[in-house]
Length: 211
Image (cartoon, rainbow, N blue to C red; front, top):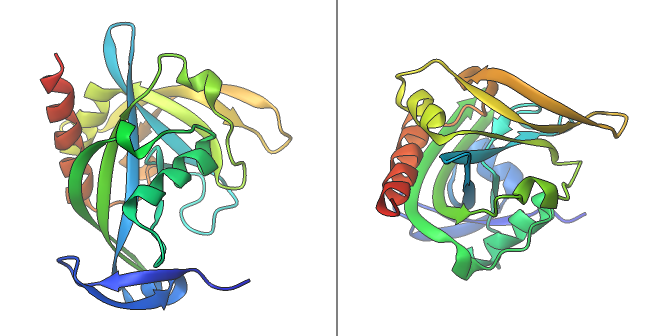
């Protein structure tokens, strides 16, 4: 299988060259990614949807993460990023339905994994019954959870240590289990502190504009 080819850029987004995904993460090259956060309403409150990464994932297995995200390959445009939503969640969305929140830089450096991303962040306002529509790519996603956005915001801003999540997890045997529990930042993929703060601020600004 041919290695994925990713466009390498500088920190400001100027194209430099094409490299394999392994080289990009091994040498810490800057590159462009697509991040899509789902929000919705439940019982009169704003909620945010998080994916639970599969325990079979090479990187950060079993941790909570962005609703859907992925790399943009060298021969793709940012509009092609919506394929990640359909591949991972089974939800077909058009690029025009997404609300752009801008480019937010994210850096995750752990041992020999050096991930420097220019994240093109988007917001999607999901249907109330979105949980019933998920068709998860089990190799990638083990479950989907939601949390009150205010709790997520407080945790990202450092004013709260935990938040409550609830949703469905697919167990190894294939059966579904209802989950409700408290999680902290230790249960999330270790995105850069500034990334989570800036994402939370951008989403809050967008939600406040519609009130």
